[in-house]
Length: 154
Image 1 (cartoon, helix red, strand yellow):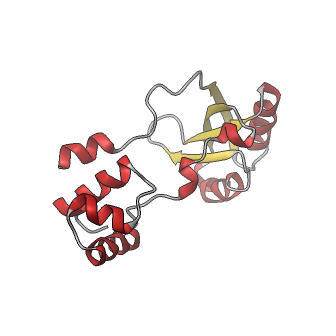
Image 2 (cartoon, rainbow, N blue to C red; image 1 turned 90 degrees about the horizontal axis):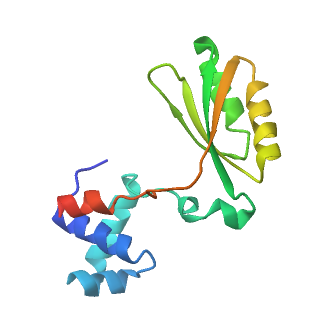
């Protein structure tokens, strides 16, 4: 990813404030030409600065009101295949490789406790998964955000 300058940062701040802004609206807001905004947006997109749109969809709207975090302990030599197997489970919305005692931290969405139990069982059935530890999220207290980091840059 290329290094952001002040104009890129201001563009991202404006998008964060109003994600539905058009190139023309962004140009007006920032005092730039539409071509400049369009070129910078293309460069930001090509550099991987933007995440997928599905991050903005609330899983509850899809019928998955509960979120849980599952710590997965695995046989290290099978890690690559385990990750491929986990990617086939639709309720897994995110997973991170971890340092420390936990190998993977998996974020899942589920319909209820029985559904969470089923998902956990599916994870445990993956060859090379040794055990899991599950925590049900009681509520999101700080939503995913980057605006404070953009504000610090600007």
